[in-house]
Length: 566
Image (cartoon, rainbow, N blue to C red; front, side):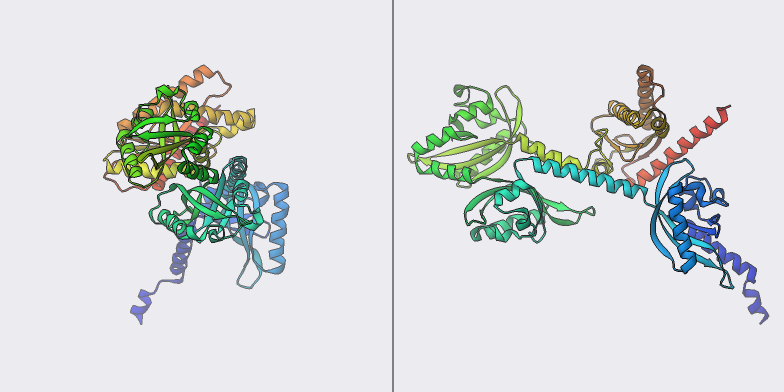
């Protein structure tokens, strides 16, 4: 029995160990944990709570009354909630209120509260969990504004825009799309594509969308026959893109659509009669070429308008002479167009996007439709070329909307993470190092408070311009928070390389401050981390390390100011 007593810890030691375990658990929480007495004074909190309030230690919060970090309107709400918990004994979960941290910065928090009872069951205080939802609310507001801009753009374009779920039900579309289908918004919402697609085209439509789902590669030009509400048949041409959620999981499809019924009718008429062909040939609002043995032998008047030249400057020349040397996919234009021509001559109509050039050398985006036609027993190619510069710009605008910061023109957090992840993979594959720089604009709040938020925005714009001037075009620059910037520079990765980059950045900031003659200087606190291609690295981990380095530098600056201030 004596041996058993020796093995058992004394009650005081067991209590101490239990308290240590509890504190360890609380300090590992990301959310704040607090205990206050019945008067509302802090008697205990974890370190996460201290960080949330921008204090160095939880001890700094002890004894503080909740009114010291709460405005009057929020204080009334807090009192009502805590008093209700006191009166009823029922915990309250999920109420949101606004508090001010040690830097007088407003934060939105979501809180749960429950009573603390002593061993006799007497009410002695409150405990709860406090979660900072400031960033979440900012993101929700930014998303709302982004969606509003997104909707305005969609409703202003003439071409249709659509989104479906994976089952093929329409979940979102603009007015132009519903007009093309001849249905009202209410009639079209939730409708499956099978209702509007002609039965003969159902299998082709399913196969095409399934191919996009299977490969993840978009189909930029797919046409099919549809049936409108009044029973008439129309042809629609659509681009198809796979739509994914934030986790990269496919959730549906989206794309641009337009009614091409008239174009289809024109092509059919051209095949029927040469005279009718010539009439429509000249009336078409697209450039139309006639190609024989790889050279242009005829074109309509719209072609001359599109390419900015006379007919004798086109006839006898080849398609590659009116193309950029290399297409966007990296293939040689001469080789690629030869393959398209041969496929069309073999009886396979070709519809594809192409980078053409006008007669003066100006490049533009075009859509080319190649079809084989027979005239006098000989096979020719008819090429219909449509300038799609406007559509491409619209598609790029829609794509960039969720990736670019509106104020500075730099990438936003989503854009940075998307591009940086790919760049790191490329750097590792090519055995290159990189430098990630986390930069925080110093004293932005002071600029806003002293000179106004418009001046604060201008400071952010100015520092963005300095970053663009400092770094190379391949480097990825982003604004990921209110005053936070991040840069990923490939082929750095060494301390010497980092010093060179940060030195160049500081010189550019100093030069700007010298020339700008503003009542305040621009200044950045930097956190710099590098990695080599033999390291296993995640972009979020790099960001966290760089953020920590930046925070240390900012603290050094603050400590220095305290020492030198009178």
